[in-house]
Length: 92
Image 1 (cartoon, rainbow, N blue to C red):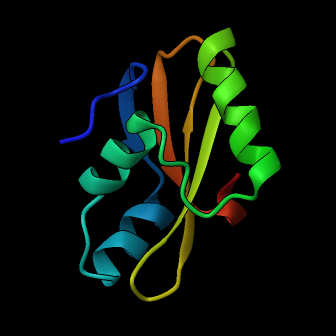
Image 2: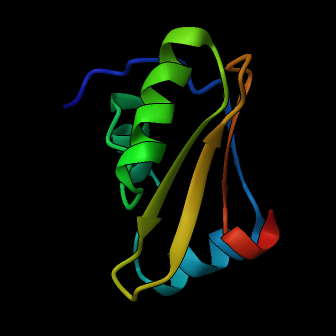
């Protein structure tokens, strides 16, 4: 299993994200592991570089993933590492 590079804090998910993940027949655990290990998912190189800086500098970290049905969702860890939220982009 991948090694976490930062703390997720409390993990929460919005109702829309919970519904989308369930509809796709998936669970959020593998995506949380990827996020905390530094696999930023479906981001461009600039956003990935921004996340690398955010890990070092204690800033907010955002990953984007696609579920097996093509639904895009985000995982955001707050700058103070107190919480990580799973949400759909339109819920932001």
